[in-house]
Structure formats: C-alpha cells, structure tokens
Amino acid sequence: MSDVFDILQERYQALVARQEGNETEEEFLEDARTFVSDARQAGAAVADLNQRSQLRAWMRFLANALYDATGIYPDSALQPLARGQLVRPQPERKPEPSHSFSLPWMLVGGAAVAIIAAGVFAAGVLTAGVFTAPSALGWLSRPEEIAEEIPTPGPVPFVSYAAVGAGLDSDGAVQAAADTFCQGTREIVAEFALERAEPGTEWRWEVRRGADVVAAQPATPWDPESGRVTVRALTGGPEGVEPGQYDLRIYADGQLVGLRSFHVLETAPRVFNLQIADVPDPAGDASQARAFEPGVRVIYLAYEFEGFCPAIEVSHTLYQGEEPLHERAFAWPGTPSGQARVSFLAPGDGPFPPSRYEVAVTIAGQEQERVEFAIESPPPEPETVSPAFGDVTIALGVQPDGTPIITSSENSFDWNTKVIYAIFDHVGMRDGLRWSAVWRREGQEVARKESFWDTEADGGEGTHWVAYQGERGQVLFGGTYSVTLAIDGTAQRTADFEVIYYVPPE
Image (cartoon, rainbow, N blue to C red; front, side):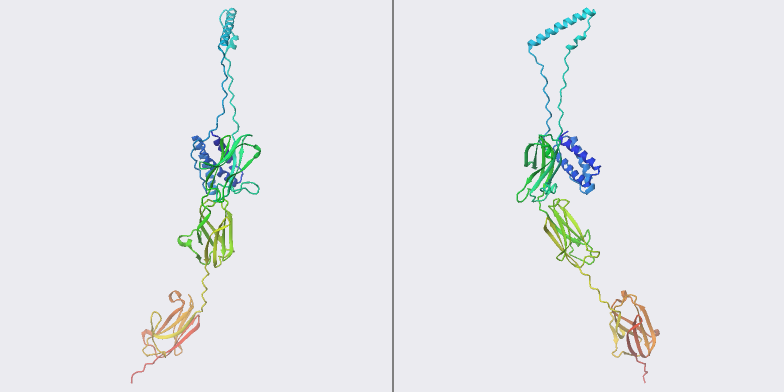
C-alpha cells in the first residue's frame, strides 16, 4: 500500500469511530469535509486500482453523511492519477556474504578432508565389520545459512490536521478557516500537524497552482516539540492573492503525506436582481411588485449573488422611511454563488403600517443594493348615510331608468286615469330594511305595500317607484289622494294628488 493510502485509511477508521461516539456534530462534519477533499486529491498519488476503489467507497459514505446533515452533497470525484508520482523507496538489502577463497588453500583443504575421511572410513570397517556412516561425519555437512535480517520500517509520518485561512487571530491561530476565499484576500495562512515523524525527519511544504509551484519552503529537520506549524502559504499584492485553484502539499522524507486544496474566487462579492414579495414563492409579475395592499405581515426579499466566500459578513436591513426597522447580520455559511431569500416580520402582533420602505443588502460593511416598496393605506371608510327617501313625483307612467311620464304641475289628473305612479329617490338603503307605501283617498286608506328592501334588485341608492290602480282595471274614483312612504315605520315623504270627478256633458 502507498503511504498516502495508509494515512487516509487510519483517518477514515478514526472518523467512523468518532461518528459512533458522542462528539459534537459540527466537529465531525468539518473533519468529514476535510477528509473528502483530501481523499479526492489523493487520487493523483494513489495508483493501485483496489486502493482507488476503496477511496471512492470511503468518500461516498462520508458524502452521504454530509448530505443527510446539511443537504449539500460535496464533490467526491477522485482526481486522475498524476504523472511522475513519487514512490516510497524500499529499504536496501544487505549484500550476500562472500565465500571466495584462493586456489592453493582450496587444494590444501581438500587434501586434509580426504585424509580425515579415509581414517574415519577405516575405523568404521574395523569396528563394525561392515560399513556404516559414523556420526562423526556430521560436522562435514554444509553450515546453515544465517537468515538475512530485514530492517523493520519505521512509522510512516502523516498530517493529522491541516487548515488554511485568511490570516491569524489574536491568539495566533488560523482565522476564518475555509476552502474558498474571496477575491482580494491579502494572504493565505496554513496550519498543520505532522504525526509519527521521527526527530530529524526532513519535511517541507509547497503550494501549487495547477502544475506550477508558486510558494515553497526548503526541506528542514522535523522537531517533534514544535506541535502544530503555522506558515504564510501565500501573500498577495494590493489586489490580493491571484485567483485560482491551489493545492498545499506537505512532504516528509520526500513522500507526500498531506494535501489541502483551496480556491480563491475570480469574482468580487456582489448581489443583483433584488425582488420583494408578500408571499414566499411569488408567481409571475408578483415578484416585481413595489406596492402592497394593507394587512401585510411578512415581507420576503430574494436576490442572486456571486463571489461569496465563507465567513464573509452579510447584512440585510429593512428601513421604514429613513429609520432602520430590522437588521440581520451573519457570517455567510453557503456556496459562492446562487440565490438567497430572507424574510422580515411586522413588529408587534399587527401588520406593517402603511408607509414607504427600503431593504438594503450589505457585504463586508459595504452596501451593495437597495430596493424600495410601499404598503398602501386602506381606502377611506365610506361616510355613514342614514336610509332615506327623497321627494315624490306623481306621474301617469315611468321609464325603466326612473324618468316620469306625463306629470302635472298641480298633480291633477283627468277622471279617466287608471294608474298613478309615485317615483322617488333613495339613499343608504340596506338589505332587509322594512319599508312601506300607503295610499289614501279622502283621508281613508285604500291600498298599502309593505316589504323588505333588496339591495341586489333595487340598489343601496338610486330611483324607485310604486303604483296604485283601480280594481279590475277601472278608472280611479275622483277625489283627493295621498301617498306616504315610510322606513321602519317612520314616515319619510308624503305627496298629494287629485283625480278630477267625471262631469257628464250637458
């Protein structure tokens, strides 16, 4: 196995054990993100197909855990194998012991062995009478080879912790650790810890942008007492660190033992396409509304953004006129680009009061965009009008629009009159209001109409009429008549008229 694979295997096993423990979710999720990022980059250094398959399985497992907890699935695509990758050198084997001798000594030794063998042979015959191989010949056998001693490899160093951030805080620790940085970031600081490194181990780091090494530290002996190491990985000019994708690589004894990738955005932080609505998901032109009817309790702001980096301060402020009504500021936790939505609740238990409002979006202390809208005032309450009837016009007929037909200035009509109409204006009438029209001749009631007002048929105000006619269609008797209109039993108007008596010709 490669050293990088061994390191990642130990880290993965430790993560799974921590997941089953009582560690806080935030710490586990952060370390899981770091592992997925490091495992992706390790694809450039791990050549064994089985190991690459195992890396993918580990990343998928942790990526699913991250998705379940945050709703965001991290990039878990293994990077292609890089050319010219380093392979950890094997320990050197000791040379075989030499057994060469000079020719004269070989001859002398051979003769001596022959003499000794002949003597032993004769002894064997004389003693036993038959030939047997005496035990004394054992020392003539070839001596056993001494097993070669293979050195035990030492512990493999690995980076147990690595973080990059935009500067240091007051305690000297990495500030705003992240994988993505805003355009214009002045410097990138790295902090890491090297484990299992023997004293004197040669270690170094470098930062690559693509295939180019843009920053590096020469190899230096490792001091186990140093603990975590903090270095200024990148520094930029007035415009900050150059945008792009970077890899921080850490080496021990010439081997890659740690990798941390980060990205400096090419686009400055900005927001655009601000939209105001009074519903969470407006449809059609509703998202472009700039004035809302009375009674709104929640206002929703939606906008698009790009160039956002983690921990950048974003603020949303709602103004009523010139005064701030609500302000919400927080460190950005999401992706560099996309869509965002925030909501503002009306103060107290009621709706937003009618007024002119503005919503401003501020990034890193600088206002970006502002959008205006208004809450309209409710329509004025209609004036309360008491129910009433107007003056009564007496006529012999009426048009559909209430115009009288054939009137008399003296309200006097011929003896052959069969129908009389009383036409009047009305205001303030409402459904169910009781009203009546009473007809009298010579002071005696001759007809009555009582009903309940229907605004759907007759309206709340306008012109109305009632009619009086003789029985069986005959002409009206001559005499003095009157009609009285009343609402809820209270007389409103009375009109008098006369029907001339019939006078036969002489």
